Figure 1 (cartoon, one colour):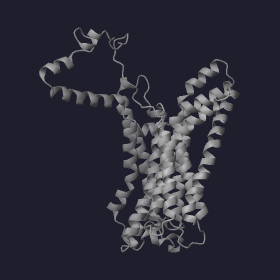
Figure 2 (cartoon, helix red, strand yellow):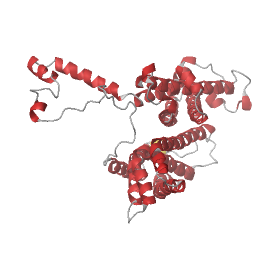
Figure 3 (cartoon, one colour):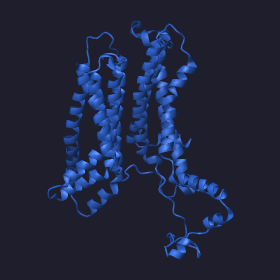
Length: 435
């Protein structure tokens, strides 16, 4: 009930984000049901149906990623002072956020089922004169358990992902302390007594070494860590080399597969030519490499903005990019991967192919819209994170025009680096299928 009340009384912008999750969930659920309909219509082609189901994992993953991003930007489920006194601690808020995500995705799954049943003619007459009976299986009874199982994939995955992402850190610390207690119980009595002694007590190694004990708050209460983990952690310096290595490996695998005539072929979605399996492996490695290299490239853009005697404007823009690299870098890398794949697919697409259908367009639209929306959600989260800094700069007398110019400078720096990179990767990725 609390999740329903928070959902109903949310801001219109928050409701719009949840409606995005609902629409993505509905489209993904319709794709899954269409896979089931194709399997019912073609029972002899089970490998093809399994391949269609495997292709549905791409829109499923992007939908779950969007749901996680929307849950992070939801202001109604963020920990605030005083909520723990009325029973809304971090764990309860995490459960509320997971329930809200489950409600949004369940609504989308119900819409997908209603649309699928309407197109089958179960609710009304058969629309479109029966032109879509190939993937609707209108002549076969729909197995309800299989349909409900497929429709539950998005709500279950999204809610579990939100619960794991927003899991309070004190819960993890309690689990670690429990494991430590079990470890101490398995130790001998002498060592267990030494381990049970306080860290700052007399006679312990810390007190004998003169090390200071942990500080105690002045009010005597125990300090708890931040219950909501911040994704803007310090940048791992090995992420950029690993991302570049995976990107180069994926391009090398694609180039090698294009020269091998005996490679096993794997059919792509309708409208695209058949590709060797190694080419698809190379595309996967390239996408993962771009996602891993995104934070490092964003951090590099921030450093380049501050080179050659920067002024206050370039310093503000560069430091902002370096601070937000871990938050917006990975969604930006995923957008580049999807954009490069869309560019290559548009170059290879044959509009005269009779096998091209609406399901491929729907899947591509879901993937593209979800990745772009996730990047926008990351921008909203970054804006919420730097709200205190922006307010402090305004109180100090910084003009609003300077802040807007710094934001435009950050956007221009990112576009000047990621747009050419996306075009180069797209050209190299389309070469194996073009020849």
